[in-house]
Image (tube, rainbow, N blue to C red):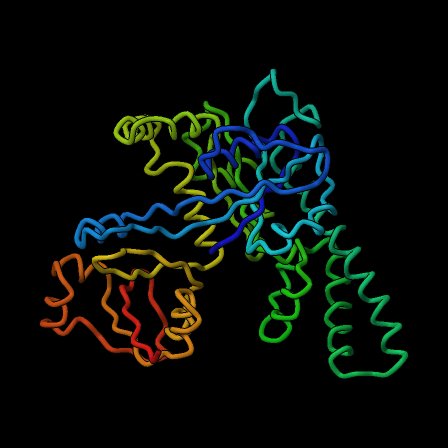
Length: 360
């Protein structure tokens, strides 16, 4: 499951977006301390709908995304996010920046400036991570005086590099680390190392600029950084649309010139940013979507279903979703040679329908 944490200044519409994404009808409540409200969103996928219509299973199970929103009164201390599991373990951060104008909802900085607000929170993430890096380096220095263990020397070198980047105002997601360095960096759970999706919360009058929100509101420099993207929504309108019947909602979106709902666009943008794809398992009992990183080998993809299937992996029986829908049955795909047997190193493609053969 993809996990994302929402961040942003007060009055940015962050909690409204959380309600939209998770179908929560009430604003998150605070108990006077830093804690996360967590909600689950079902990933809209027309392919799963079509497969469900084809197989008429007992259950339809979409992929899901977990969103977390901080429940605190007033401005969130970004450093506090480091102590909240839902943020430490998040795959990405969704930064909600305010672009809407509403005299009844004053901005903490008095003026509306998405670019300024985005940089303000980005700087706070850097400072929070810098504190983590400095404290760990101090501990490493003490440990290395007792003996220069190779793994500690490597860790120190990586953290020195991270500290230099942070002091230079560069988020750790821009370092382009690979292999062992990338794996070790994930272990520190730095906030600025996580991919960043900037959600521009638009004014009702600016809904037509949703597709170009990043460039339209001065975020081009930020978006030029690695693993950073933007999407525009008007959370207020989208929350109203989400409460309509599907046909009425579609008509409303069409009137606004939007091809998809804000929920769809935010989730798709998060998937694209993280390089996530979906594959499907089908049958009379269940049609289900599973989310995995792009280029995941078949044996690892099997682990998304169950670790026993991954351990006992033998072969994957694979057919692209569009071919299955066109043929109308797995038997017809088999007759036309479109149902393939793939080994454990096969890289699962977006939209694959897979049956895993495994030892019990």
